[in-house]
Image (cartoon, rainbow, N blue to C red; front, side, top):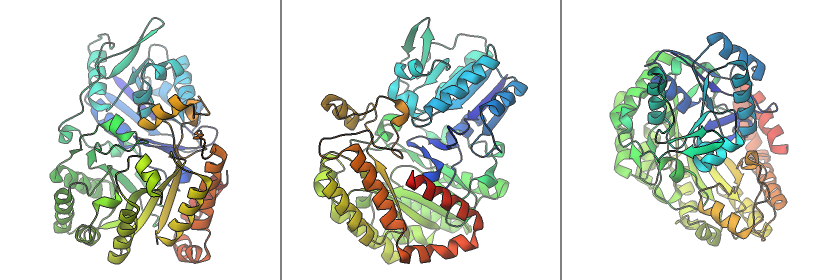
Length: 471
């Protein structure tokens, strides 16, 4: 059997990250992320035959025509196409072109798009034969078992398929309890030297540390895709994967991919100390909640290679945090950033404009307050009413949604939520103002100038980020 796995080409010239809940333009991050899940599926596919994995984000001038040509030359029985909400029109166009050029091929889609929409996903994307809902690994393995035995793929748990003009969704598949059973990603099939960090010019990769989140934030899709129960890889698994990346691929910079690294304090400290005992010269970043840090764990993280901590801050207004079921306080936010500064750990704050209770005035106050926090980096988004989230249900019930186009469900794009207290246009203006007021400060520009001069390639990425910010 032959299996192709495709991270589709740019959509109208724009490249997208398609990794779990992170679905946005690469320009908004000034970096291209490696498609971790797609590469894990490639490792699974190797058990069944020849595999061709290609990420059009890093291939030279790949468009739909070149993608189709590569698939045709390889001549697979199964093609897996990575998807996301903002890129879905291009993803569907890619799948359709492959289907038209390759008779008999089974085209499989996966990702948050299929998980949140169920049968509506296949209705919107007729080129896909089947779609995987939820964690894809076990369902994908079952698909390949069926194909290898020339059996009917339909009826599998975690899958949606077509029966004539009807779309059928199989039973929901349980979440994977033991994540250590998953194989490492097939990084040898990726062009690892093209996934570059924006601040130091080093190649990096994602390491999955845990899946799931127990918090009830109304806007978040992670509990839907990965569940509310937190499941973790063991320290040994994580260390082995880090060592593999260093020895086989010369990668020494990592993004620990999970929701709340410090939620289990003992696990986090134990992993940091285990990394320290290895004596590696590595650098890593991760994310957490503002109310889940203390000085000791931050010191331990910094001492053992952590160079950047992402904090989900969302807003500087308590009533908006409460409306979003964030279950933390503005004081938690200030304290977390202050502690990071105290121990010398760089921070990236993540903000969301347009949540229930937001007004132009609260948005402006968040912008001005956030500038004084002392964050090193900042990202801000528009609240998106994703299906199967509390915000999505609330927005549909109240008539807040201004677009039914799935590609517009893009937290890195323009707002499609009109709550009555702030318009989509005012949300977009707030985001633009925040980017400009944060990144265009003279002191900040001078601080970053040395990095740009030292790493000329990052000037190109920075210019793309500026262009994206103005769009």
